[in-house]
Image (cartoon, rainbow, N blue to C red; front, side, top):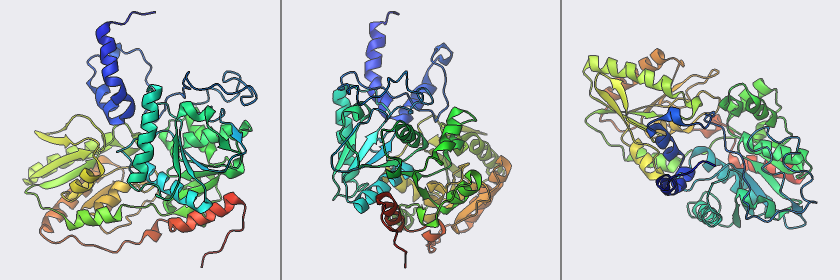
Length: 469
């Protein structure tokens, strides 16, 4: 065994809690290491997740509950979450809806996680059952701290309205899955391909009933992985026989074409944008002396095309300097260093913002750049457009602008830069005018969520599906 110095051990204790709970902190810490070549841990794709680890303090299930050991399970080692739910045992208790997440981080609940919680809440109400939030990615915390985190998650999602206050809500961490009493008539909801894969393996292992599983699909997630085992496993989840709940018409169309899926129109809902907060940001718009350019930059998420955006912004910086336009560049999304754009122009990185800070920032932005190379219509371009800014985003599979303040440009640095420069000049010409408030028709993106939830609930319960008026 290698010896560990006292100072190294103290450093580990000091940073371990923040490291495990805060993704942006992890990114910033990694980027600040003085000698990354000395690290012997193999690198992994940014979307990969840690292997599930069951706490030694947890009660061991009986042999009847576990048909084979993890090593003997034929699905062992496929990917990190393959066996996350095979130890779940079911008994004759009242049904719940178990919504499965990798993790939920309080105070960082945006877009996808927020939507998943809201859909799970609505579905639990429709099914008239309690809601159980099941986390399958280990925190690395001691049992006491892990329990405290689960309590914090439960209190936070209720207090901030992510789940309905009338619901009975509980949170189960990965080390408690094998000692939790799940019901034989429970309903299950996957929220990411890795959680859908865990459900699929549990169903294949005769632990869960496939007909009582639904799958919230929020993007074409095979694209989050290179051609690999993970890529094909992600694809397989769309064919696992779960009841689909699809976030947006563009994504549903892509799934029908790419995966040859038969997705009913009634299973597709329009993503819920933060309309009240965005209207508030639009009404509170402030004019700054310099034109403010915002970049939604997430270097750890390949689909957000971080480097491509930086290249486009460097071209923009060069162009506007030649025109003598005073511009301030700001970036948010992940912690990290400021970015040099050339010619002395620096883009300040604001890191991962709290919700209130994010909407306050939007009220000051003139032009924004937000990229995503996937079929799901990401939220930041809509946030920018609805708050009164001009939003530039990239083309993907025939993507069209769904708002008058949105500009779709070819996925090329020069073309994106041209679109941004045009937007900057247009913004300057319109400075001082009140921000327009064009009508927003969410039906462009899908059905009302309550209609979709009623449809899915009927299928899960095996009752006739009512026709909509």
